[in-house]
Image 1 (spheres, rainbow, N blue to C red):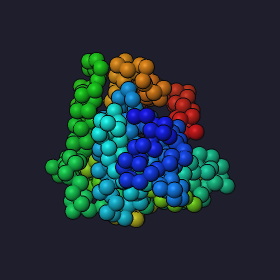
Image 2 (image 1 turned 45 degrees about the vertical axis):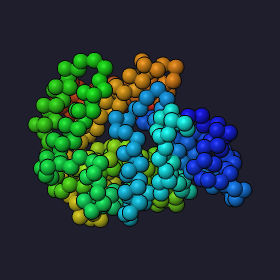
Image 3 (image 1 turned 180 degrees about the vertical axis):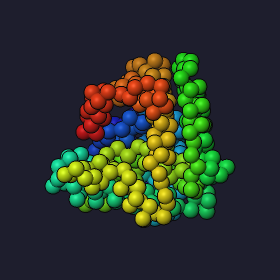
Length: 356
């Protein structure tokens, strides 16, 4: 699709049934899974408005789950108290776009939380407050009545709470096998380890999948919209704590731990009524690493098949992210030494550069 103001003006005029002037098109710099565009416009000479457009990269998808899962999640969650923006429309007509897209409303706020990554005492109260806000939002997600709202029409339902871990592992392994570019004997070890170490869940919940700094829209310290639902699933809520991206920071002062993952989980239980253990979180952390490797395989496929259309972030995900995830995953399984501090420090710098 051509994202020039001229072409978008024609498309928006078609969709809205009135003349539309595009005043600005801004591609969001963050994110490796899909492309996000902020489009400002005036409809029929009225006041300026703004929407968000989501679409897969030209060279091919990075995320194993299809784009219409995101669309479905926004539409369904619009009937709950989970803070999400309203989805507007889905588009897959070939006369307008060469790959599917959807459009949703925009909301005032930012993914960038001031001082969240600064480990200094004067920011402790603020950082803990942000973490608690995130715990409250996840509690709303995990208490959604997914049966009444029909989430099982799109998301696989585990047979029982006891099989949540095996179900999630099998789904990740299936996605990996569908996209891997070459034989990978380690995958057999991973499959055996995951099935042997799966732990029962207290209940089956709606899970968001991608969490943490950069995934939600904040305003004045509050979440006004939860975003990036491409990895949503039904299963153990512990899965949502395996990838927190700086929103459960370990804060130690004068030899005492005043905040961290365990304290965040304790607070989460107080507001959700759901008990989550560190052991279950660690198990889902291994699956999360494996899933990122599958995303890396998809990126490598896009790079090899359409090098002239590939995104530079697809190269980063397919190489550095996949490599570090392999090291961490194998270490968790006891098959190698943990990644060195230097490797993790370099990786965190790379991640922070993507966040900037």
